Amino acid sequence: MVIYYDPLVLDADGSRIDGTATAPVKDAVNAFLDTLPFNGVFVLNSFIAAMQAVPGVIIADVVAVQAFYGATDPVVINDQLPPQYTPDAGYMALDGAYFDGNVTYEAYSI
Image 1 (tube, one colour):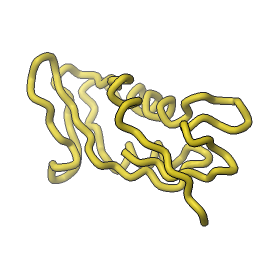
Image 2 (cartoon, rainbow, N blue to C red):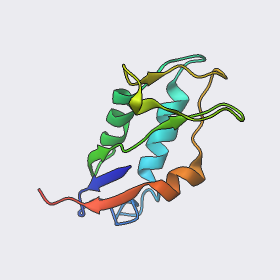
Image 3 (cartoon, rainbow, N blue to C red):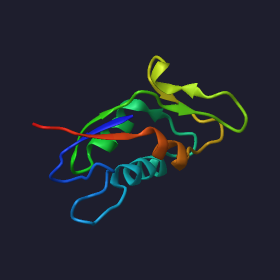
Image 4 (cartoon, one colour):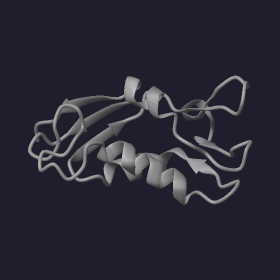
């Protein structure tokens, strides 16, 4: 994923310049996943909207969103039509280490 951000609000690592949050995009992703009901459908457009609602995020460009349960092979959600996913285990959780290693931040000039 590439997050294009306003450099007056966020730093190159995605933290807020004013120091109020060190990982606001990751926090927004976790909050979004927490709002999904048990067996709730993950809708890619809603996921993107949650990230773009973060102050300072201009564009959330999703390269790939994957989901898996246990040892099953990952399902690439953005390859599904429609781009949505119903979890096997009822709830969804973010793989924080994978997120941190696969999200880049690029300053966006308006």
